[in-house]
Image (tube, rainbow over all chains, first blue to last red; front, side, top):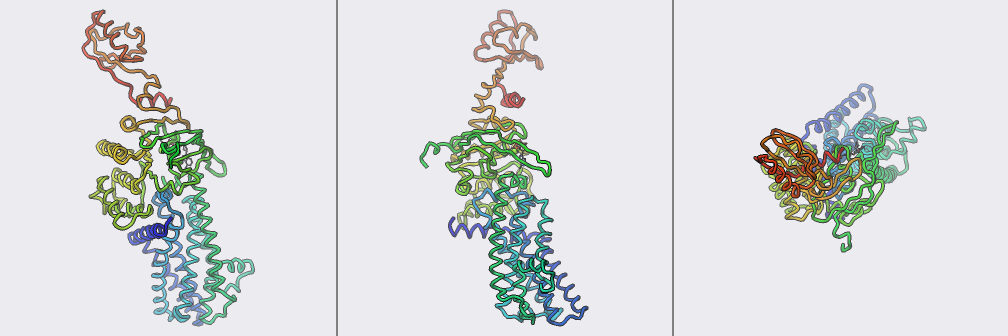
Length: 264
Length: 317
Ligand SMILES: Nc1ncnc2c1ncn2[C@@H]1O[C@H](COP(=O)(O)OP(=O)(O)OP(=O)(O)O)[C@@H](O)[C@H]1O
Ligand SMILES: [Mg+2]
């Protein structure tokens, strides 16, 4: 496949997801409601508990990261979910494209959407709680966002794989599994407070490292030696694993007939 | 590719497919039990058979949506499992129960799939406009998919299936649920696709008129096996249903008619005597002569071939 066709297929999916997103009010609701509720409740709680400014920043970074990852991974999961909901999955896999086009195309829309959410939450955090996202500088912020986007890609593709493996009834199960993993990533606490075996899981999650790197600029000593490099390496590993899992799930669905079942 | 396969659009041999579903108690459904099918380039072939016969399963395997358990399947010279990618570029499929993303508009759906097949810019625009015109979707191009009627959705599916200018087209019950007027036009359209663009078409249908009218050849499938194969005419002869000579006589009843050699049976329907004979051209003169000799007045005569529907009912027994 030529580069032109590669980009075209990705662009086709990007355009499709963007159009669907723009036309569905509920998608928009999803985009705004929970992130705002998250920042407001965490911010107010930190005020009630009289946390220090650094501690408040710590938890706010966590809730903002969670929102960014969630919005972005949901969009990546739309790579198959939209078609599962509309029962049009087979058309995609009748065309000469790969799953990379579906996931990358959706990821592009996911990044745009979650960036919008981030800007909104940053403004809200600044206005309501005096929290400044740019305090660590542009580079640190960019790495933090990149970490969120990469995590979202991995999670989203994993959800795609689970849905293609177990059918659309597995949707709720898929969300639960991946979100549980996310919460372990030291969203609201440094992983040193976790019991050993959970801390081990947290250390295996790339987002942990990106959170750690970003928070180090708010006065929390980094718990890792090279958090960003470790985060990137782990992300690459999981991205490859998730991609492979999704690919295997599609091949299996072609064998078992699930691909057809999900299209009728 | 200039091999003997070059002339065959489809060459499937001993294809088997078993679905396994259910947990913890597994159910097995043997959907195909050794199906072999060849289709020549440029032909329209109908796959007929009762519900659950394996028609959709067969089409899905040929279109790379399902992998066969056993057997070899070459489509357009490609192996459907090993060379699926190259093959997908050259074929397409539409089904009678179409579904697309609900809030995309007609033109957007076509453009989306067009891009997946590598079209862009002016080429894509021209293709989309052409298909919208071809499938008479002009007034609906900006209507969201979920707001379309069944017939319009079907036309969108047909338009989508032509977006990559396929050499081979699979149509799974293309006129399901369409009103007669639209069905006639869809059929004319399918015939035109073959005539003007030489597209090879494999279709399934439960409307025998449609199969009779459109198909060069018919494969009759039941319980995952192909039971009969041939042109509609050949099938009718093969099944030995005979032809019907219908007579309006005075007096209305002639008891000895069914005893004439070659007459299989006689029944009375609405004042007509319908004699099923092995071969109408041979038996008609004999019948007429015998009636004339007996002094029976013949007021009207009609000769009918058996309908494909009767062949179907016979085979499905
Ligand atoms: N994805 C699937 N998973 C499990 N079983 C299936 C699947 N698809 C088909 N089957 C089973 O395989 C058999 C053949 O089904 P198929 O859909 O090919 O029949 P068909 O000839 O197209 O019937 P119809 O005329 O009703 O469309 C049926 O018994 C059906 O229940
Ligand atoms: Mg069917």
